[in-house]
Image 1 (cartoon, helix red, strand yellow):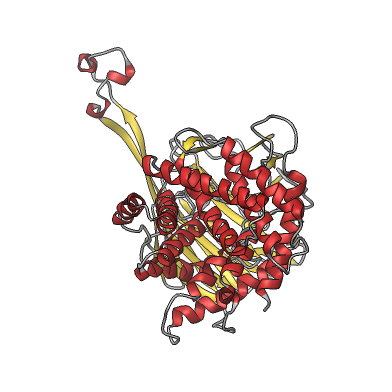
Image 2 (cartoon, one colour):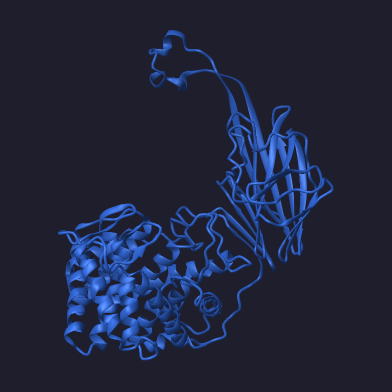
Length: 555
């Protein structure tokens, strides 16, 4: 496994793209920045990775850009952009949402401090190089000032800022940076025993938290910080889907439901493997297997990505520490057959070869079955008083699987008469009203996972003649075979099926054993979520109370 050679290839691919996107003319505040085609302007916080990629390629003898002066010119221009867009208080803006944002400085410092160290080690001290080094130092010192007076928004920002303060303390010896870093850490790291950080963001912010804690660990004498990182990396393999993406249905951030790959964890894994440990520690053996998997995945995708994640930082870190790329392989291979329950997170996962099951509590899309590259999502709703969706209050383990439950109540209020005290609705004490004709709805869904099938057993106990629907939301464009004839399966298309069906998309096949069609109130059902316009949806419909069972199999 040649990490250094491949990292240089990935970074060269990135540099080639960045050189075309760097702004050379236009608005003065954009000159030198990285143009964002989907925004139409430059984000100052995008410049640090561009600067790092340029300088890493310039100083790496294995880069096809090694020693090319145009990279120094491009880095200089980007630094002028970054410093021009720095406010008097040292902060920069994240123009898409946050202003005078010291956390944007922190993310930038996580990159540029290592770029600064790279220059200190490899610079030939030409006038251009000295100017670049001075501009980097100016930004880093402004960022330290900004972080000392600034704050944060989200849980992961605490560790990003703390890591940037640790870097500034190590480099500049500013005790105020160390003191504030320790204040952040004194809050306690929010990684529970299941490896979940607060934001449950396996696609984005888990990576940021791990990276930040590993930086603090390296910059300070805090070896205990490896523990939350290891817990999080132990969790990751259970969240990897058959197509190599990660399960994001439980995320509380913008990666929710998105198709993202885990290869950005690779650099974190390399650093974690270099922390002192007992060679018989099973966590590190499993981590080695995960690292090998992520490296293979990066090889598969790295040359085709527009922006390979961390490509410049790979090269920078390997130039600063070549031993980082030396890994003892093989480790323990990742499992492709398991059942794993995370009760605190409210997530259940099962893997059966090319199929993977996800259950989540508290979400209307409570089940996802991924078969190779094809996905099936399940939602269920009824017309019950506007609170009739199956949004499980919890997940409990049962024999061969798990149970989801939801209880809802609905009824009517009696008048208060003169005790209402006001004609303004919001001022009336509604909690004093008597409730009458109260009805109850109890959903129970057992999801049983076997090596070759998933069994769904749904029980709906409610008032008489309650319409309900079960939505099977499928990747569009497959071939649907059913006793009920031909149906279009494009985006936004739907079918209500009385019988089971067979659905094939590419090399992946799903069989749904039993249908149900007792009414056609589906797409327009009141108080249910809109249909998924980017998917093909099959409905089963019925009237409660009653039961419905389905067996899912696949090829």
